[in-house]
Image (tube, rainbow, N blue to C red; front, side, top):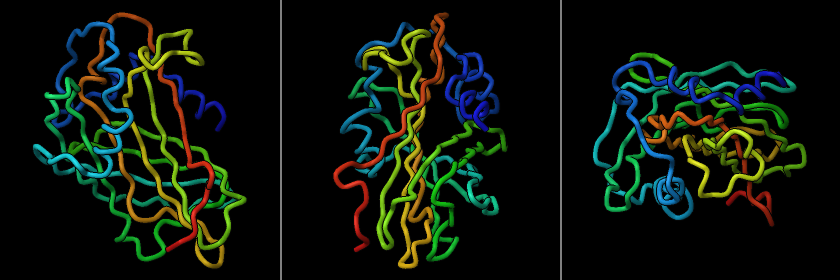
Length: 233
């Protein structure tokens, strides 16, 4: 598992190109300059939050995407496959690559959502309409101290950074390629589950980056602080 997680965080740029295969999602790769500060921040901050919260009017929809969800830890819940509602946006006025928003509705699984162990790994695999893998996300978590009847979230980002700068790359040198937003809730009995929906962001131009320079994929996972957990309403 350790080797798998390390490999998921440090993919070569050539691996990204292999995930582009399959029509209906991404156009062929095109030559692009080294990422500028404007492009590298296009899916960060308020813009990122606005996309996740649906504050931009979508330009269109793409049907046929699915996501396979699984988890491992003290027990391994059965994997489930659910449809993904994918929309894209025209944000040319922001000098930004056209982003895609994917939403996986977990309500079909029932009120309890998708049950997961309190410590482990979440796996979310996104498939395009041709059932080709777009991206497999692996996110480790530890909510062993989460009280009953509380909630929290994890936001997992994957950046392209120059080789050798993984630990200290400035924001102007990082290009956000993928984002995964997971919401967790503990029941009154303390059982943990994914609930509500799963949201994903990915950008066409970020995946078409082909500068000829050595880049690697860096994973960053963030959670709320002060407080880390909030009581259920």
